[in-house]
Image (cartoon, rainbow, N blue to C red; front, top):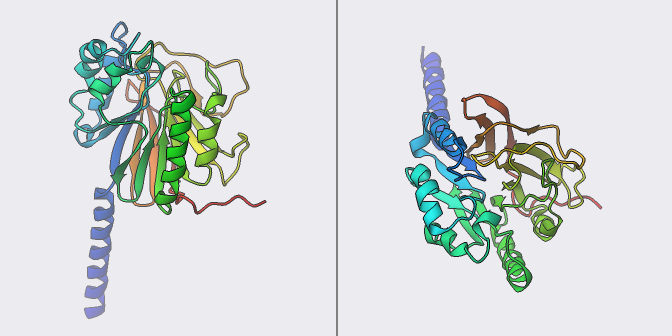
Length: 288
């Protein structure tokens, strides 16, 4: 009887521990290329977000191009903020529509935090927020900042976000000018998040040359949150998990050592899903 009681108590404790871990899951919605109120896509995406049972506790990760045609303060207020203001916690990096003709002041009037910067997502997870619109001295300064920051993140689970993806099967294709970011994040980031191409794509882990590698970095494009949708590009497909023609968003859940994701269309359909494990920064070294 005592042995049975011990087993019951142990099972209860294990169950409680499991519930505690699940309660620690952190939920994020990743959106990019949104805030075009000439189309119905932005409103449809927001309705789909708010149909998620836990939406009020979720945070947004916005991967750029948040106002069309140019993200002025007025445009962001009348469209983007009209729809996304109910989300209390938002992390945003600028896209080219947020950084056009000297109008980046509009972006920073709504999202005042500096970019680049690093934000905690809870537990061991950190979001490395980068600006792929910078050029010349400002670009070099950002690279120097990243070189100094990465050693301090050793052992943590890094997610890097910037607008222009290094690799893409979409209309715009690869963005070679982001190669310095990609090289620095090898062995550091668990995965990266992007927009710019207006589709969803889950790209496999690849090395600095774009070749599949278990020591490489996976990436996601979540650029289908309301702007005009794009089809496939002319270049070779970078993955077999590119989805075109659907407005939607990426749902991301983080626990202590793993992440789970879903690509969800505005009609609530899960069009793709997957999971992965934290790759502690600095712990992976490719064999020579």
